[in-house]
Image 1 (cartoon, rainbow, N blue to C red):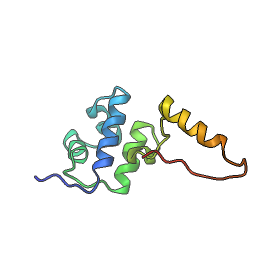
Image 2 (image 1 turned 60 degrees about the horizontal axis):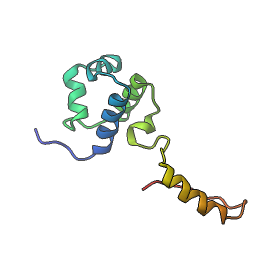
Image 3 (image 1 turned 60 degrees about the vertical axis):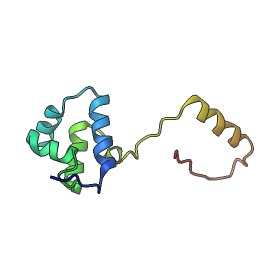
Length: 102
């Protein structure tokens, strides 16, 4: 079956969270209420994620749903923090802005 390209990021970030927590896909599948095959189909793009899937998987992984889309807390390198710091020094304290890592 051809891999769907609608949500490659959700697949990628979900796999990353599973790996970073040292979990097995099988245990996450069971905790989320899927068979191994159903969960594999989601993670490999053979089944489209629904909102319900995202909630079930986020709950099983004990993360926020946004984390499955890579929208969780951004981790910055020391170099990036130093660059941001130098930019912030020149700003008025009343300035409001949003930093987005690209």
